Length: 99
Image (tube, rainbow, N blue to C red; front, side):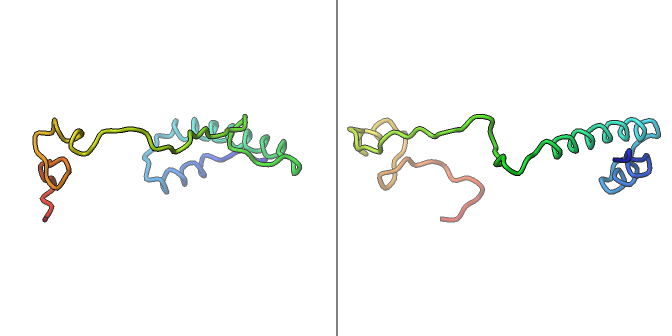
């Protein structure tokens, strides 16, 4: 694989609307070359018999059963509210919303 050139980095910088100094172009060219090499090594290791995965270890979500449990009545829940309207907490309007 050929090394990324300084001109290619300058082109990418222009596309990204980045102003880079001459020494930055050389610095980033070397860094991008290392990154491209690392990606190429990963591509070599990837085998067809290994399925793609998003995590190193398998994940399983743990869910509890959805059961009805004793809870507050609407009156109990709203008993400490400073303002109530239609069995709900009344709060000030925001963002100039219309009713």
